[in-house]
Image (cartoon, rainbow, N blue to C red; front, side, top):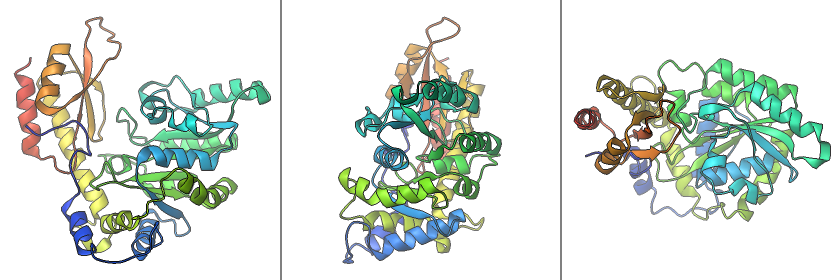
Length: 359
């Protein structure tokens, strides 16, 4: 049975593999100074409508978060983020290892809200130099639990951050899923215009590895971050000698010559397909009698299951299990299903049919 464990178990989409093979024998300068990285950066600037944006490439999402947060803050500052945000739950203290403290709110489902950010800001600033100073907002799109931010939600966070002179950073490990979710009204151009920095994830969207870190140079925090990033990247061991591999992959992903009939380049096209499969899976699971843990249109879907159902689903299709508080008191757990660029409608129908046998 097809595995729904995550969206990075496979290799890369055919267009990217072809590009890597075609350029395999080329000799290029190292550390991201090659023509492929430069061209990929130009393609990304065009795609996001930000011709002056700084674009660099790093191998993974955790180090991208470390670099962005370190570049946008000082050692005595930290980001305000939700309690379920990726750095608080899955990065083994990576941000703290950089001397920054995470300032977590109590927002549920990893969805950061201005009112909660305001409460953290007031507590921290009331104590002056005795408390970590908030300097930025961190949130991911989609969130750890699949929420897709609306334009209104995003603007509310940006407006609040501006009112407190804080930077805004969007972790885009699954940005492609968020931007192509059905009904999504927040665009990548709007994020690029308002955020101080964000990432475009490749690892979870059909590349072998790699994230594009984009920084807006139009504000003082962005300009300062751009100056600091090369040094921070080298110090973190993230300045990849064969950086051209990421350039080749992002080049293929954003190449307009590879767009489909609807105008989608590779980067958006496969994400849209993964989302479509995820929505189909969600509908099938609901019809089979499973209750959603959270409603989402991205490529992650979450359902309440009994521990025994969760065990069987994990064995059959790799669905990961989360132990959460069950409001019914029945001791249920949450099973997560993730679709990827390789997922097909037939794969979805097979796992739904299996789930039906567990009811």
